[in-house]
Length: 349
Ligand code: ASP
Image (cartoon, rainbow, N blue to C red; front, side, top):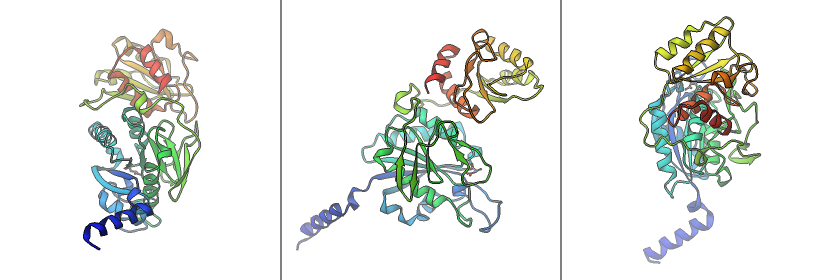
C-alpha cells in the first residue's frame, strides 16, 4: 500500500469512529480557585490564579474523548481582581473565536467570586449563538477532592453540545447548568454554592451527558443592542448597600467620585431611608441614573411600589441582583442616560 492510500484509509477509519468528528472547544482561562494552589492538599489557605491553562487541561486527561480542546490564557487572577480591561479583552476574544467556523464552543475558567457578573456581562455582549460556558471551582487544584477537573470536563461537554446553543451564556458547575442571568453565589465555601434561586437551573450534566429543561426567558447575546468590540472603557457605576439609618452623604460621595450611575442595594423591595432617597433624587438631577435593586436574595423589584419611581426618575431593577443590575446599567449608559429607556432595558434583558 503506498503512502497516499494508507493516509486515506486512516482518515476513513478515523471518520468512521468519530475521532475526526469531535467538536472543537476553545478553553479560555482567566484564573480563580480552579487555577489555585495551596502548600498542602488539606488546608483552607491558598492563592488563586497560579496554574496555567495547559496544566488545567492536563488534569482532565479524558477531555480529548469529548472534544478537540485547545487552551488560551487571557489572565490569571483571583476573580476578586477581575477588571474592566479583562472583561473587554474576554468579550472581544470570544466574539473573534465564535465567528470562526472551526470553533464549535467556548469554555471559560473563572474564579467563583465574581463569576455571576462576568457571565452576565458576556450574556449581554457576546454576539453568537454558539455555546459559551463558564466554570470554576471552590477548591484549589491541589486540594483533596478538588472539584475543578470534573467541572472543566462538564463545561467542555456543554460547550461542545449543539443542544446548548442559543441558550445564552451558561455556567456549568457542580453538575448543574445555569443561565448567566439567573445564577448567584450563595455560600462562601461549599461546592454547591451556585444557585438560580428565582427561575431554577437550565439543565444538569452527569459526566458530560446533559439534560436541558428550559431556555432563558429574557433576551441575550445576539438579541441585545450591546456591543463592546470597539469599547476601551465602561462607565463608572457604584453599588451602595442600604441599611438602617444610612446617611445620604455616601450617595453624594459616589457622584463626586464620578459615578454616572448608582445601584442602590435597597432593603426589601428596593427601599431606602428618606435621607438616601433625597440624595439619590439630587443625583438624578445631575444626570446620574439611579437603579433600585434589593439586598434580599429572592424576588422582583417592581416600579412604584413604596417608592414613586415615576416622580423621582428612578429605574427598578426587576429580577437583577445589585451586581448584575450594575452590569446592565453600565452597558445601558453607553447608549443613553434616559431613565425611561433604561427601564425598558431592565424589562427586557
Ligand atoms: N477568590 C476566588 C476567585 O474568585 C474564589 C474562587 O474562585 O472560588 O477567584
